[in-house]
Image (cartoon, rainbow, N blue to C red):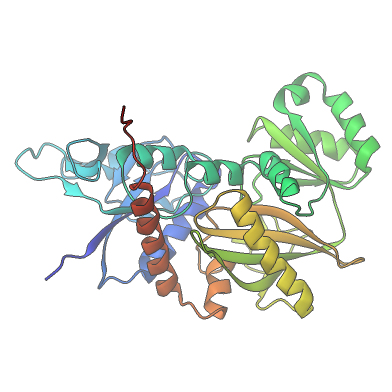
Length: 373
């Protein structure tokens, strides 16, 4: 009898989206097909310590789990090693007579920095380990709203105009930055950390005083801040799934409970509504799906992405907002719901993502690394 595929589900992390990652991992572990996969939970505490064997519920406390509470002499530690076929293993502490538990594939259910931005992906590439989702380049580009917008423009996709402000400018030339933003866009505007998701650090500013506070807060989360004019729009989203031949899901719409779809509206109050399919014209939905795939390819993405759009209420103009390379996987998240309405159940979606990760690894393994003279 063939053994189950060992899937290491990595969650938590050193990110402002730590709690979201834990909630997503809990959902994935509940939905994954236990008859096909052996699940190995691998938590990352806020400190950065890896804690294999920790259930996601253990990290849901108001304060971060203390490593001493999670790690005992019987708890395995995650290591990277060239001595295992995959380069990644769980080694039991103080148990030299035991064999390492090898992991066949990693499912990084990590959102934000140090997990969704290419950092973890690079480590897994060096280990030669298959993993779910985007590679180093795609993950890094998708995380950086400023660089992604530049590539979307090159691909001919409409984006809302923006100004990028650095943390150094916030600290040394804040008044000049506010003046330049107000002169170009007026108010209101949105200030966003360039490398953060789940609307963490995003603020809508209605005047110069609010913009000052918004830029200061965004600078806490990243060295670059993207500032955009606020438009009277509907928020439209589309899921993409695949590697070289990506597919687009049906289109959904978010009706946020707050003034915009901020962190509280996404994850805390539960009052926002998801409309799937979105009540928009068929021609607009078709265009959104087309642009979602163009954006996916523009950033050289693999596996999955959720592509977010603005639909101008006054003109019906569609703008590409951003791409999420590891969208939320909680019970109320848009990405799995989009695919469910498209005909792919949550367990089947997880299964497909794992297979796509393995296929991408096999394709990459075809690359020659030596040079013949």
